Length: 128
Picture (cartoon, helix red, strand yellow):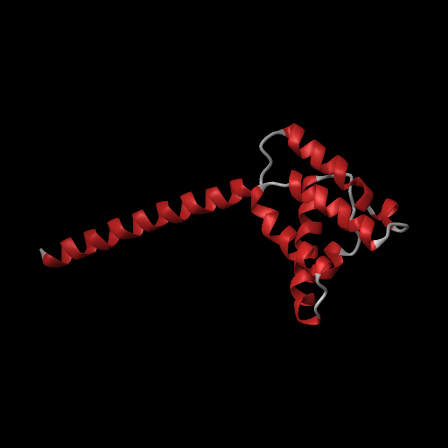
């Protein structure tokens, strides 16, 4: 009888754990989503200058301004990446360069996944 109760408790704990993980996973997925299609369209319109076809003549300062605007329009879940990249743009320290590169790739991937017509260039190839 004790073994049945122990197994029942373990089973209940496992189910509760799965529900909690599912809810947290759903909330994290939702954090990377736009509130509306209009929000996504505004974000993609602001990201257009970063497309490979448009960005070759942009200065680092101009790119920084575009990223600043995008961070205002982006969903909450990607804000940390924008913060890391902005921090590096403001204070370029060699020890922060790898974090900035990772943030840049994450933002590039997010833009490409969110905006069908935008190709950042090198984002997909750098992850392979």
